[in-house]
Image (cartoon, rainbow, N blue to C red):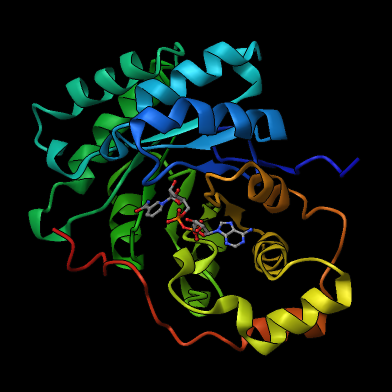
Length: 277
Ligand code: NAD
């Protein structure tokens, strides 16, 4: 049996399983089955968002699993069109109701949308959700360093995580170092590059896979883990779900980590947070 998934502590004091399961682009009619499969395979951390339109099905799968509420870590996110002062509280409560799990483990601002200049005000509302316990931890997503600097300067709470695009061709070393200095956990979305590059064909990844007798996807996910990041790979296939969580029983050498790190081209597959508004 594989070693258990490591738990990382957050600024709130809560623990987050370092390997989670993402449900972006999982259609609502498939979500309950997919999440039930993920829980069966051993995932105890599910990442959804209001914008994915499958929160209710994620909640239904967790309730149907028979697992204790405290044994599953659930993240959801505020949608971009809910930042207006009068919208934030209602949007949060609707997520809470849709999930039907009593509380949310981690609530994130999905995108900063800097042109609207609302993210600091939104963050202050998030502080209330943490204070009243409806969100056990609060964090952000797609924040660049200047956005984080403002949140740190203008509020009392350090974001528990910043969930950002991160994979070997977009490795974000400066942002990760900033997080580390401030106690913010790095969470990698698109950890496999969303299948938009032939990451798995790149020599350092292929070679490490052959050396350890694992798949290239496992090498990429293991690279994230050894950098200290949280990963939330997505797959609708139960076999790949199992593959993606079975990454705790081998270790990449310093040389392999460096060779994979050298693939960084600073190239995003997703939107630039400065321009998503
Ligand atoms: P990903 O990098 O996890 O790639 C997913 C794709 O990789 C799958 O569709 C599948 O085709 C393929 N794949 C998965 N496992 C594989 C394996 N073992 N071998 C070969 N191919 C495999 O991309 P993602 O789904 O976009 O990101 C993961 C999660 O991150 C999402 O589901 C979502 O929860 C989150 N996310 C957040 C944001 C954000 O703005 N905060 C943006 C995108 C995604």
